[in-house]
Image (cartoon, rainbow, N blue to C red; front, top):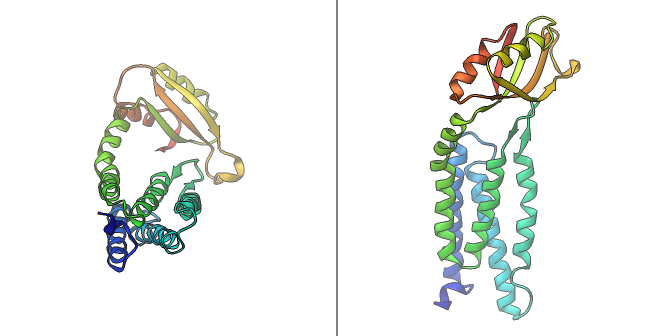
Length: 226
């Protein structure tokens, strides 16, 4: 049993192939959604982490000294630069790329497990990550649909203030939170009044009904769910 854990030519080939496959499986899901980090990025991250752990194990096995986890710890902390690069904060304060960043970090962790020969964890762990990214996306969409909170970007016609809009929302049993007015230098000249707001229904109603109420607000020029 220890043979498959040692650094041999066969073990190196198996680990490289396995890390490439599992990293690719995770990356395929991200690539299919046109995310910034897709197939090749996840493959390289997983393979790179595997190579680091193989090298670490080889040095420890060759010289019979050193910490077999030292290089792996550097991978865990160092992967942050890729994760940070995939997270974007849009002009309207939307945060995108968190799942991709988490996927990259998870791919690196799987690579470390493969690199040290912990196949019993690496294979089911990689499959579980893939299932989380695919199957649970539908569950996440269902949960979002049932939410009574709608984060919105609102543009009002002309130079109207928020008064009529706020009164209309209150009359329809809606509460407004975290209002953020867009700065004048960030909005186009033809936009009268723009702001980001979280709207919560004070009564039990589905998301579609909440959005329908918002879309019928007075002086509404543009509405976008964030």
